[in-house]
Structures are given as structure tokens and as C-alpha cells.
Image (cartoon, rainbow, N blue to C red; front, top):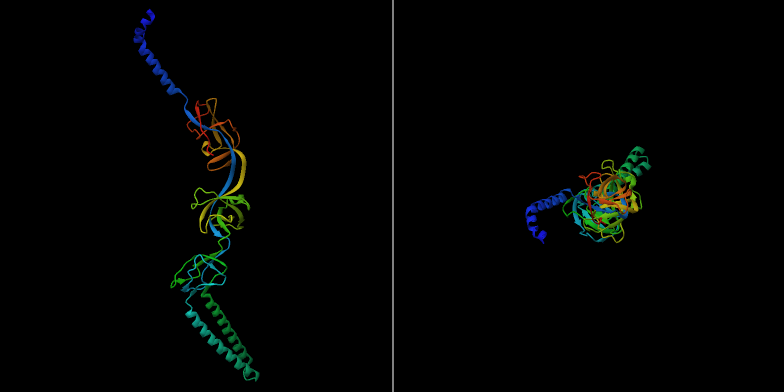
Length: 344
């Protein structure tokens, strides 16, 4: 009982020492304990190597329709979205001047023919020279040819559909001046559709017909759209340094003519591969935790994607990989791993 009775005195004398020791212990714990790092385990999945391209949705069968001669628009069908037949008149140009020219040439042709027939009768009587007859025949033929040319020009004032299809878009207003370098109509068949994409020349050796394509469109955010490489143009554009690639779309695609898309052409797939987040890498180096310490080593890297990277050799299901790569840590540093699930 005497020992217990002396406790308050001891605590009073040495309490400050105990408090100091407790404070120093806590300080050591906070200052010297290993820092926490986030780790993930490699996940099995499919890694795809892709070639990126941009393109536009177009009908497989379509045509731009522009006048073959310049002139003022006289009529316009207003038939956007409607079905039209090959040869159907869609618009017409003011042809009064062309008709006047045709009438003048027709009069010349008739006069030349009359002169030729008259000289032909005289030549039979040896009343005119053979040279005069040949010249009259030549003039008659030239004027007939001029009439035929003008009839063709007059026909060009009628703008006709070059194929059966729908009017995808029309431009121009009656009274405006139309010219051959300005299309007035886009005519095509709504189905089938394809994407006409441009691929950089350094990537084109990897692209082959039959490859699968994943499409992204601002019109359908978050929706995965599919296509297939159908054709590759044999000659590239030396200025843009691109090759044109045609991507066939399925019959029931929601994409519409004129939409722009981003295309990821799948050139190679690695099945059931080890995958890790892209930010876990420093080149081909990874950092992981083993026995409470940082291990930094190079691994064999395969397909590199935007979000994930394939590791062909150097990791297993038990590897605790640090993410992101710890630039502030060195090989052998003590750390405390905190595990989280790797993104799918």
C-alpha cells in the first residue's frame, strides 16, 4: 500500500518525462514511417494496336451535279430529299441567247446547203470548177456541224440527274449565276454508306483490307460504331502525305451522310495479355513494391494504347505496380502499398 501511495508523487516528478517520451515517439512515427503509394495488379485483357484516321460518311454511289455551261438559273426543282430518276430535269438555265445562236446557225446551214446543191447541178454541166464545188460542200458540212454543236450547248442548259437516287442536297436560287465549278445538287443512294478516311503515309503499310475499325462520332457520344476496311487507294496525296481508305459501314448504321468520324483501324490484337495503366510506365520501366521496398526495373512492353499498355514479360498477377510512376522514389526506398483496382 505504501508503494501505491507514492505513485502520485512519482507521476508528478516524472510525468513531464513520460509526456516527452510519448511526444518523441509520435514524432518519430510520423516523420519516419514509410510513405504510402498506390499500387495495382496487372489485369488480363485484349490489347489492340490501331492506326488513327479521320473521315467523312459518304454514299457508296453518288455524284455532284453542276451545269456544263455558265448561265443564270431559270428554274430549280426544290427536290431535296426526293427520289429522282436518271435523266430527270432538275434545273434549267436561261437559254434565250443559245436559242438565238442556234437559229442563226440554222439559217447559215440552210443557205450553205442551198448553195452546195446549186453548185452541184452546175458542176454536173461543167459550169463551175471542181474546186468551187468542194468548197461549197465543205462550208455546208461545217455549218451543219456548228448547228449540232449549238444544239448540244442548248441541251447543256437543262441540268439533269445523272443517276437514279435521292437528292441529298441542293443549292442555288433562280436568278443566280451558275457555273461548272459550283455543284447545284448532290445525288446519291442512301444505302450503302461508307467512310472515306485519310491515313498518314507512315501508317498506311499497316493497313489492310478486311481489318476491323472502331469509329467515334460526336453525334453519338459514348457509342461504339463499327466498320471494316474495304479498299485502299493505290496512289497517295504527295502534298498532304495521306492515303485514302474506304471503310464499309453496316447496313443499319446510325451514321448519316456528311457526318465526320474518328476511325481507329485495328491492325493487330494481342489476346489475354497483361495490361497496366499507361501512367504506370516511364518508357519501358515499371516501379512495384516488394517486401515493403520500391523495385524499379525494365519490362518487355508490347502494344501501347492511350489508356493501357501490354506487358509481354516481367510481371505476374501478384506484382504490385505503383501508379503513377513515382518520379520522386528510387530503387530500394521503403513504402507502404495501398492497393486499388485497375481500371477496366
